[in-house]
Amino acid sequence: MVEKEDPISEVAEDEEDYDEDEDEEEEEPPVTSQSRMRNDRERMEGLLRRMSSERVPLRVHDVIIKGNNKTKESLIEAEVQALKTVTSMQELLQAATIANARLQKLAIFDSVTVTLDSGPPDLPGTSNVIVEVVESKNRVTGDIGIFTKPEARSWSLESSLKLKNMLGHGDIWDGSLSYGWDQTSEISTGVALPRFMKLVNPVTARVSLLSQDWLKFSSYKEQALGLSLGLLSTRNHDLAYNLSWRTLTDPSQMACKSVRSQLGHNLLSHLKYTFKIDKRNSPLRPTRGFAFVSTSQLGGIFPDYRSVRFIRQEFDLRYALPLGFARAAINFGVAGGVIFPWGGGFVNTPVSLPDRFFLGGNSSPVCSLGGPTSLLGFKTRGLGPSEPRREVGEKAGDAGFDPSSERDFLGGDLAVTAFADLSFDLPLKVLRDSNIHGHAFACAGSLVKLTENSFRDLSFQKYRDSFRRSAGFGLIVPTKLFRMEVNYCYILRQHEHDRAKTGVQFSFSSPL
Image (cartoon, rainbow, N blue to C red; front, top):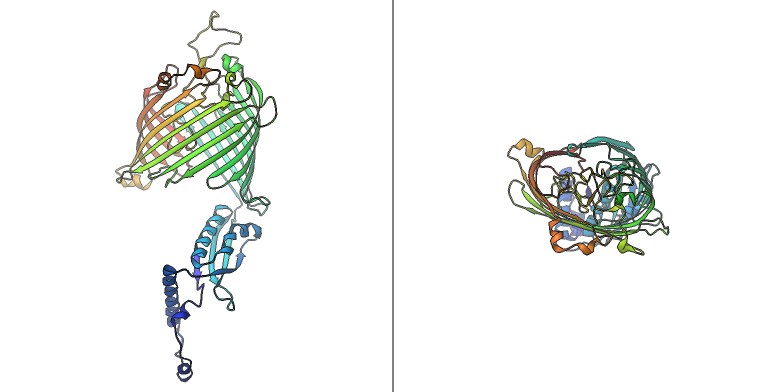
């Protein structure tokens, strides 16, 4: 919100020519409230006409900050610094709008008002900027939700608690808890600072304890205690560092050879850089625009022999095309990723199991931006290279070995996915008002192994045959608490051991 209160009192004076002699002889008419309002309106109209036709020179004399009882004034000054360098009225209006948005983005104020006022009378062509903030009355916020994916027979309880601006530096402290039935549990706490010392970019730090039970898909459990630092965060660029100690165990004693070879402890130390452009009009139901994300990851920078070393590259490209009726739009997307170890003997070395690519899941790929993940109709980690589970010490030729028993899904080193999604409004007005809409989709994806010299056996024909495909239609119900999808998926192509299902499938996920 930007208010303008007579920034230049001299603009209208150029249009009036007073005769001093006549003023002395004739008595001035009394100034009424109506005439004053008319004069103010005329001066404002003259100012707007001048702004639209020419550049109006102006500089800021002072920036006055009000309402910051807890917040440090230096933080607000840093966010509105651009106001002090403007040289025209047009630049001032633009800078004031940007300053308002930057202060709102801190998420520590209930309201922000930027008012432009005229400068001191003895300094013509100047303006004062008044920045008035209303700090959040409730510094503690929290939420809780239960999300479920019936097709995977799993659910998760997620809750979070945030403390805002406790130190007055715009700091946000948060703690979160996520508990997933037979899948994932995570406890984490962190802090985010919009500015830290001389750095002009936000800085984040987070400590987490993660436990993942993948016994339904692969016979191992994963635990990781980690520290992540956000080093750079701008509109298009993010740079983060992660250090964690990870442990893989096999409580079932049924792991295949590829899983057993990686059980134990290892150190994960990596840098992650993300470049992102998102010009879509909505992240949940885009009807126009495009988005692109590229993620580069270098693992193993910590000098330790147990450090996991790999190079990982992902990209994701989206485009939404409006059709001009019933808010219908077609979304196209293609994503890919490759991971490879580095160091001595890297050609024969496998990539660490948890860091590989895994495809599947029943959440719409339209909402997931970042890399190859979703493939509707296939369960989470439900496709890709796999090996039969076996008892420790058994070999393929041992008596009693059953190759048709459960299998360990091992993920892949090269993943590619693509989709097309047609979204449209439904005929009933009550559904359109609630943004409940339908969609039809088609998906394809491939997951192959490259390490341990597997790339030597990969041909164009084998790679083409590695693609799985599905299609279907469904209903999407977005609410403030969750996003529900009811889809009918038809599996067009799958491999022998893939976990896929044709039929109606439900999904409840976070609304964001």
